[in-house]
Amino acid sequence: MDYDDLVMYAVIDCMKCSAQATAILASSLESFAQRVDNQIGRLYALYVSLDLKKFNFIIREILKELGSDPDEPPRNDCRTLLGSALSDSIAEALRLLKGGHDNVDSLVKVGLRIIELSTIHALAHSKAIELLKPSRSDLAQMLKMIVKDLKRHSRMLVKVGFLVRGAKRSKVGRRP
Image (cartoon, rainbow, N blue to C red; front, top):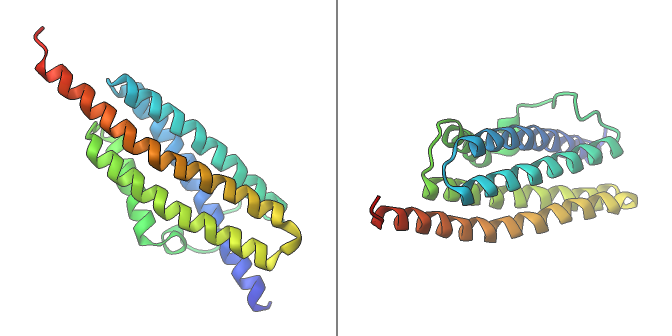
């Protein structure tokens, strides 16, 4: 096994971890959306959940195209493969979502961290595929589409945070 193969195995394992993370986050966001009182927060949580399912589908299809079974567990620990910054951010998001917290600032901050770190991973995977599997540049393009969606989510998340905080403030000033 040469160096290129080792790098490709690492990319594949990391993508498997990304697929697992997107599935778990999508499920948590769906549950959160059912419990959250704010309509803007609920709609955005459902929207992100659908996009995470789309990302999961794309990543799984790329894995299949690379000859890997997406249901087979990665060879290494996901915390190691994704890095502690992304793993810790995902764990924090899951805690906030499962705990029923509607702390918008915390959710926005952790969401932005996850988006930033996931963008870096997707770009790295895209570049690795371009370099190691030049005949499969179509797969790299699919990852770049995810990056564009992540950038869009970054902008939207900031706006949603302002809207949700604004809605809470306006309710505080109202009399029943």
